[in-house]
Image (cartoon, rainbow over all chains, first blue to last red; front, side):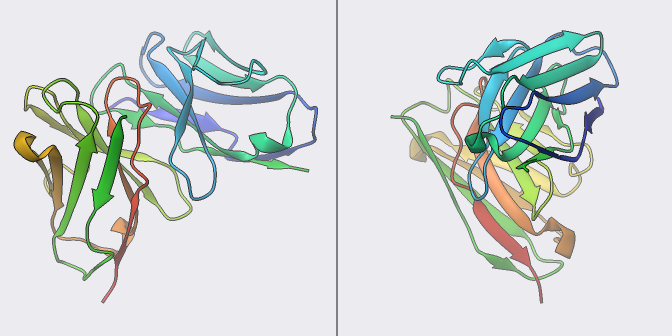
Length: 107
Length: 114
């Protein structure tokens, strides 16, 4: 199975900060990665498709990038509504595997 | 519009079998896959398995021996059955439409406790 190592597990940042969350894949997954945002008590919402493509309706302050086996979700200027958990998912190979999640809090 | 709704018992006793139903509308089960994803309380997401549009299934390696996914296309329903439940199976269980993962159910909370 492909392992997705996500970091950090939690972080606290101030409004306006640039925030980056990373997932590292244990095998080649190409760009077959989705980033999800999940707010308390809600279902996950896809934010980034195919590692770098913004989903419909997602603010442009969100972006995705890839460097080798490392995949990053970046929020360019943190807003209060971005407080949530973030998860990566690889869909290159079954079984699909998620990262362990990142809890993003506002300072 | 596309909707998925999970249903099932909120409480299951240890060693018993969990049975959940995902009822879908707005799309056909013969055109889209449906996945099951769970989330232990306060923890991350775990992909459990899928019912493919053609009736094939795939399972999480760690759950494969306990898990079964089936469907009734005439009722637009996908079923999950998992046996030998333990307390660490407690959490929220979701179904989601495959492909873009853009539609999810609201989730059903399952507690495993005696």
